[in-house]
Length: 376
Image (cartoon, rainbow, N blue to C red; front, side, top):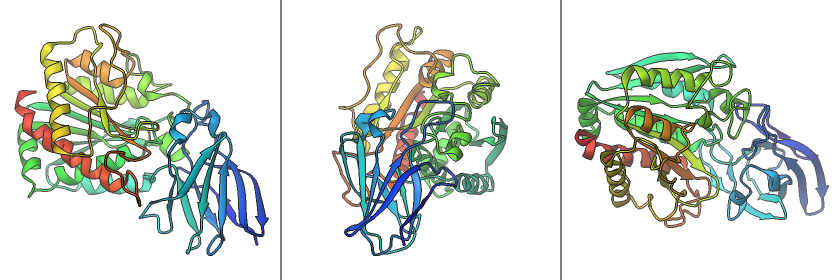
């Protein structure tokens, strides 16, 4: 009997072109499905049944036309038999086809672009955090698919800190980062958390794009809109997620903001800033550089050598959240990027960049914030 491949579940994405039984095993040809009403695609997540004890070759044949084809070079898919531990799979890329080879012991097995963060886990995270002492929950509104945008607020200090993730839903490492941040901030025995809760009010949006997350999108919401190009003029019919969050920011003001993402091509952790905004000040820039350089000194999982080009004077794209927030509020804002590949400076042959490393990075980021919170 041949294998079965399915993706009809939360964040699932794959289309089956063919499954062929061969003497050496089973080969399936597959393609990634585009985001709804969009040309973006790169995220995949599917289940393979009937593969235990067999050699299985999974060929995703439409990778050349994906959003970031350079992201496939030296990339390894993640595979899990228990949906808790996601290991690097034997993966190669050539001529537009990503080939994943499996010999699973268990049946079934799951394959994904990165370790998924399900909407059920999101609701578990919200339930956990909202029950902790000193944590306030607020539903900012409903998405176009009718899902809530959740805001958690911790602390009562004067500095206004905003942490938000997963504008691009396929970048699931961003929500693993958020889980790590909440784990630290809700620990009453953690001195960093105690200091931050005293000195700052911290607003967290763990998932800004639940519709795209559940639909298995890479980059867009329910109607194919890239939320990180909507911050200059969000609307209720195109980008209510951004409208809700930006309106809430207007209520509180923002002193520091971190927008958490994942990068398909660069094998490193890095941040991008707001250098090209019209109203940039020396203080803003100095604090941004201090945060960046301190984080590089605190954790070997972060570096400053690789990253995005810096925008020229007055040339920042104000439709992007980091630039808009820095310009709108005079804030120290940054985009934190983690790899889909691995941190090449400190590789892990079994897991690559992983949920655990994403969570630990969040805790390191908060420690750096605590060092400089009074100066922001």
